[in-house]
Length: 218
Image (cartoon, rainbow, N blue to C red):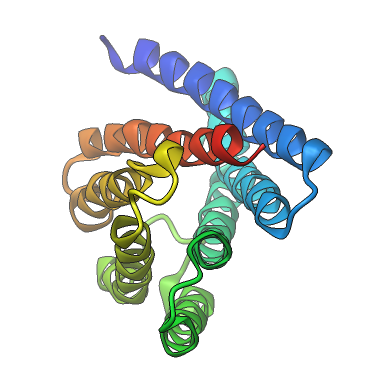
């Protein structure tokens, strides 16, 4: 598959992904009657909104071939997606608490919020240079360390209660896989652009989480 053809494949995939995330969120909220249902619906819409800022410019860049002209929009989209992904995992944590009610929740929740706040602060730091063509790779690592730890907490929560709700049995694995696909892109995509393709299965892992919650809770 040549670069142009893959660009169109990615654009179509991204459009379908956004439609699926938006549709799932609206569907869950339209039928929500319990706090966990409301949170899972909001979580889907948060994911959609952040990824839309990131993916719509990418789709436009493929359609118009004007990637350089859209560079600032692409940079802002990366920042927006970084922030909303953080909120997504905080909401997923609270959804898990509502579903499983673990006894040690308050102490772990403080750590979850601390990691989320640190992640957001690092994302907002000007040293990230979101709008520069050559953003510093070291800051990509700094801002993703607390994000990885945040994801680990959520993964452990869902893994520890994997048998509680059959439809959510494999959500912990989807969370782990989303980070397994995401981290090589963060660390090495600057040297090897083809690693960016790992964002496609990462998006599939997110959809699995949303669909699992929708099927199990609604």
